[in-house]
Length: 406
Image 1: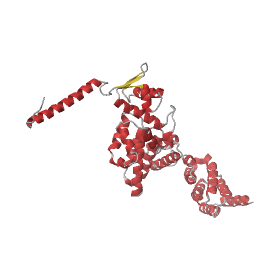
Image 2: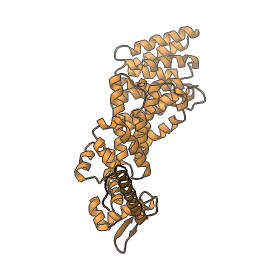
Image 3: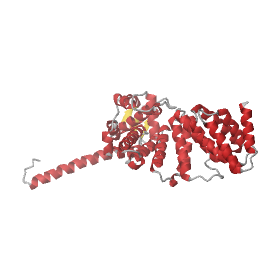
C-alpha cells in the first residue's frame, strides 16, 4: 500500500508541466524519504522512477545528484542497501549519469573503509570511469583516485592490483601541484617495490622519501616520525637486497647519512656495508623487526632474509678467502653443501661475485673482479708499498742525523 501510494505520488509529480515546480516537488519527496533513519524502499522507488522515461534527463540528473550526495545522512546499512540498488539500476545508463555514479561510489567506498574492508573499498572506487569521453576530469583528480585505490589495495597487502593503479598514476604525476598527494604516490610506489621483493628499488625510493620536504606532511612531530620511518625502511630493504654492486652503492649512501646512526638497525647496516660475516644471533634480532612479506618463503625454500644473509656472507667470504671448500662454505653460510654450491654458482653466473666452482675437487675459488684474480701481483704491490714507506722513514732519520743500523 505504501509503495503504491508513493508510485502514485511520483506519477502525479511527473504529470506537472512546469519543470521548475516538478523538480522542487521531487526534492520535497526526497527530503521526506531521507529524514530520520531513512526509507530505503521509498528511495529505491524514487531511483526507479527517476530512471524511467516519464522523467526528463535534466530533472533526473539534478534529483539523483542530490540523492547520491545526501545518502551519507542514512545509517551505514541503509546507505549501502540504497547505493547498491542505485548502482545496479543506473549501470545500463551509466553514460548519462557518470557524475552521480562517482558520488555513489565515493560514498560507498568510504563506508567500506570505515569497516576496514580495504579491497572492497578499492574495488568500488575503481568502478569510476576516469577515462570517460563524456565527463571532463582534471589530471589531478585522476591521479588522486589512482593513488587512493593503490593505497587501499596496499592496506590488504595486494601489491599486484596496487601496482596496476600506481602505474596509471605515474603518467599523471606531472599535473600534481599538491605536495601531500605526491608524497602519498611516492610512498605507495616504495611500498609496492618492497612488497614485490624489488628491495634495491624500494630502498632508493624509501631514501628519497626520507629526504622529502616537511610541507608534504602535517605537523613537525609527525613529519620527523614519517621521515625516520622511511629511512628505517630504506635500511631494512638495503639489507634484504641481493648482494652486488647496486646494493653496495645504496648501502654506502645510507652509511654516510648521519641520520641513520640514530636508528635501531644501524649496527646491522654497518656490518653489511663493511662486508663482515653476519652471525645467527644478529640475523635473528634483525628478523624480529621485519614485516610478514619480508619473511615469506620463496620457490627455493629460503625466506627473503635467509637468502639475503647467505648471499651477503658468501660475498664477505670472497673478500677473506682465495678459495674455500664447498663443505666449509656451507658451514660458514649455515646451509648444506648443495645449497652453498647453488648460491655460489648463481652469484658467479650473475656477475655479483668473481670466481669459479670446481665440482670435481669441491672447491670455490674467488678472484678479484677488477684485476682478473692476479693475487700475486696484488701481494707484490703491497710489499712494494711497505718498502717505500720504510725507505721514506730511513731518509727522514738520516736528515735528522739519526744513525741507522743497516
